[in-house]
Structures are given as C-alpha cells and as structure tokens.
Image (cartoon, rainbow, N blue to C red; front, side, top):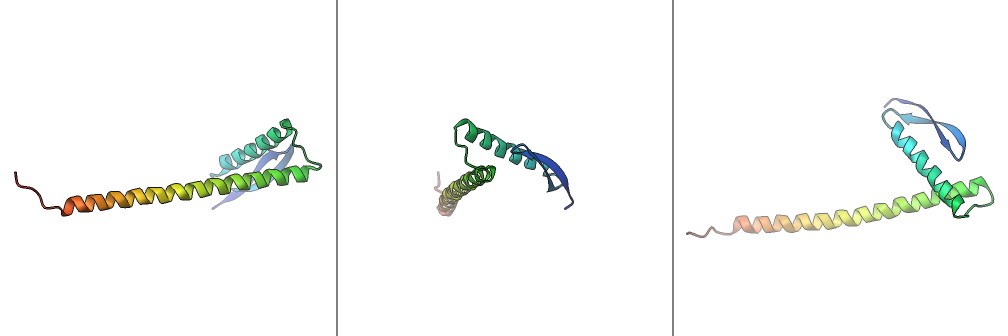
Length: 102
C-alpha cells in the first residue's frame, strides 16, 4: 500500500506522519481525539508538570479505553455466538421433527 506524509497538529505541534493512502481521515480523526482529550484535561485542571507527562497520561487513558472496548466487544461476540448456536440447535430440532399429518 502506498504511503505518503500527512501533516497533523497535536498539542499545538505540527507533525508530518507517514500514512497509508485512504487512511488520511482516520489519522486526522485520531489527532482530533487526542487534542480533545488534552483540552478536556486542561479544563478539568489536570495539567501535569511537563507536556510529556500530559501526553503520556493521555496515551494511557486512550489505551485503557481501547482495551475496555476490546473486552466489551469480545463479551458481546461470545454472547452473539451463544445466541447463534441456540438458534442453530432450534432450527435443527425443528427440521428433524416428523411432520404431523393433518
């Protein structure tokens, strides 16, 4: 896949990032999410001593949110598979039952 540089702004810093073609909007949305979280932390008065500490905490919070969503997705996936298995069993039982004569 071809890559090219996309300029984004995070924490008031411009960065050129290599990005696969077609993924530009996802990269821009990710940068916007980071900026929103940084701004939310500033508004809550959760500023740390250095910008690096602030970025690290934001990265940790994003990673935690990602892992939480991943676990939730896996639980939902297991629940759906259980429902599908139950439906398959029900259908198989219905097909195997002899038809009643009217």
